[in-house]
Length: 239
Image 1: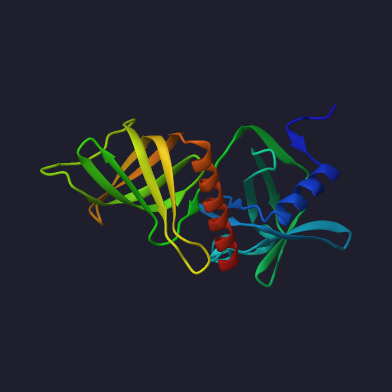
Image 2 (image 1 turned 120 degrees about the vertical axis):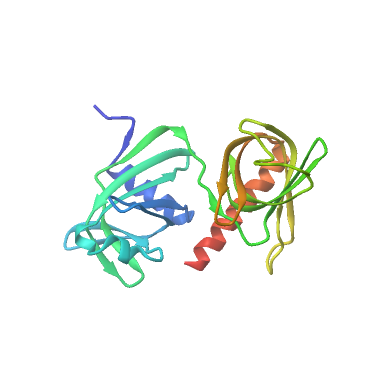
């Protein structure tokens, strides 16, 4: 009986081919090290009758993973159906800026959706007004589901502690994606968001916030998707 939660055989080859054709970002972790980075598939090959996947090596990978033949790797990614997929493999060998890893027996398809966070370009800002409060946040990373950044400026006076609270509703926030040599400045409006995490960085003496997007109009979501795709392309070009 075929397990609907597992993709294997020829469908797995086709899935990986789609990931390569569409330059899909994968999250890579080295088991037992805490090392986690983003990468992408660069090819499928056969060596001595065995199939391998080639992955682009993130900076610091060899130092964290050690000898290729003994490292254990886990991957997760969003598939064409926007569901989350997981697979694991062990061993392989380095090949220049790439690593060739044994083709996994299967990939596990989870019945849930996941939004990968992408690092943003310098100068990306989040702005909003809450009653009389005006806030500017420097964005660290973003996904289709939310945004995370550090407080840069606000107009509140005599405030001790955080200016925002957990689960607080924020209406009409604007995300400014800065212009570069290829694209003009883009502004995306989030109709409603919610504060999901409040952190304090004692070294920099500032607060950091994570917001979940709760409501966004379709045209604005389309712009957000395009901005995130652009960030992915920029990420791949920097590899």
